[in-house]
Image (cartoon, rainbow, N blue to C red; front, top):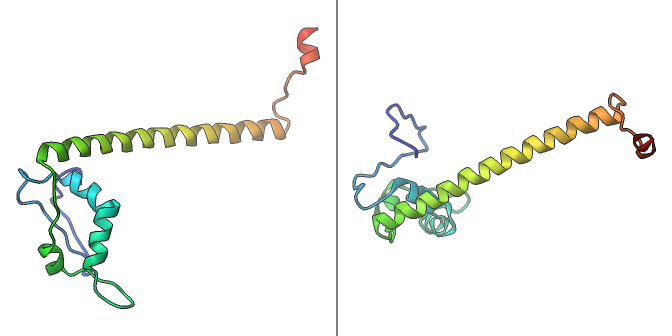
Length: 123
């Protein structure tokens, strides 16, 4: 998604797509679209099978997606990408804070670190 993959290998149950008309479609926008509810609903409507669903290459190639203008696609993809980066930063901060709390609890509960009582601090 982030760039061109020169050595890309797929197993026998996968197939890849490459945009041929990059003037009409933004790859990042399409990736976000296909992971969102409208894209998932489209994939459900194309799926075939009774117990195990499959998507045929032909059905996907024949599918039609209504796209906004390329500039709007790019703007939407930029906003969503920025949100992803912000969420990743917040999750990293949360994880770091959680680890710090765990370390502090370990120090306090094992007695390695002792807190000064309020009475002793004012004496």
